[in-house]
Amino acid sequence: MDISPSLYYFLMVLTQPLHGYQIMHEVEKASNGTLTMGAGTCYGLISRCLSEHLIELKEETDRKKTYQITSKGRDILNGEIERISQLLSLTQTYLGDNHV
Amino acid sequence: MYKLQKYDIFLQAGEFLRWIEDMALEGWFIQDIHEETILIKFKKDQARRLRYSLYHHEYKKAPSEDFLDAARDQGWELVGEENLKKQLFLFRSSLEDPIPLETDPEEIRIKIKQSINRNIFNVVLYVFILSIWFYRMISADSSSPDDTDAIVFIALYGFQLLRLILMLIRRKLVSTSGSKWNGIVSRISIQINRSIPLFIVIVLMFFAYRHTHAEMVKTTIVPDAFVTVSEMEGYGNSTQNELMTASQFSFDPSYTYFYQIPQADGYTISLYQTRQSILKNDVPEAFISASTRAIWMLFGNVPLLKVLEESPESITYWQAENGLEYLTLFLEGNVLYTLHTVNLDLKQHQTVVERMGQ
Image (cartoon, rainbow over all chains, first blue to last red; front, side):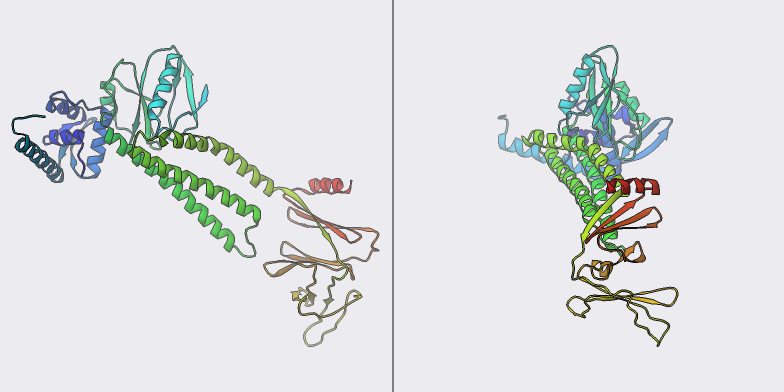
């Protein structure tokens, strides 16, 4: 499965229960301000990940729905972390301290 | 004010947004958006700078209050209606540089493809329904599609197939953005969308014309045609009684066809096909005899027989009716004029008959 940066951070922050507005703030915080998520992207990801069972609805109060990652979502996220780690490790092995 | 849609929403979203932002600078504000929209409604107000954004949403689900609140927090407000029938929504912001509603290009492409897939499904459904309609038409009893029905079907079918092909191309272009084909395909799809209302009007006018019309057929009776009618009284005791005198009678297998019409009073009219008979689904529809001056026709499911005894120089007039169908025949020498009207009342039919006589 192709994981975009938005989806990656989205799954990462949902390792704790959050509602939509909190997700957007946590993504910006987790990415150190490099990724600002629009409301459309956030709620689009919520719909998509719900249908693909990567996240689940945890709680619904007033007008706010709280979501959290599922075990399937964790598998996807861990797979992506593994991939990125391997990429970084291979890069460091090849280039050493000599950055391009 | 209404303006014709200039851009393909899927392939020229950027151009479309810039256009409506320019309209806002002139004081015209778009009221709503739909996927295959042809006319855009604008309302006049005080000119100001606005930013617009398109949002593709999940099918059959209105945007949640949660999402609308989050969008509002980022400076966006919904333009138009939020209802279940749309997948495409328009937002606007008065901020100079708001956080875009959609920040991930890959997610945008996925959503647009889902919207296009939904439209493709609808078109495939239309094609399927058209196919069922055509199948029912050709398998209906005692009828087969005439040329006009076939033309309408082919036109509708072809139109939907063309839309389907364009949608498939659009879906491919969305995946490979920046292609030189975007502009070409967009222009074609815009023109097709604009032609839909005209197409519908033409089809409706066509069906209205067919539903109520008058048709005149002219047939020339050739001298060597003949028909023989015989009566059969009861069973086992037949009386051959030719109702008219035929100058010639021959039983040539290459020309003849025997058809019997049982009558309610026990008599049977037997007809032999002539060279001048008209067949529909192997059932004789009309017989014309030059030698015996007899005309036999099927009018709906009712057989009508008329023996014409007047001299060839006179004009014979015969009228029959079948609900709101009227049939009038004029015999002038060896030329038979048949006027058939559908869904005209008797007065309207008479008017057409009088016009024919002029």
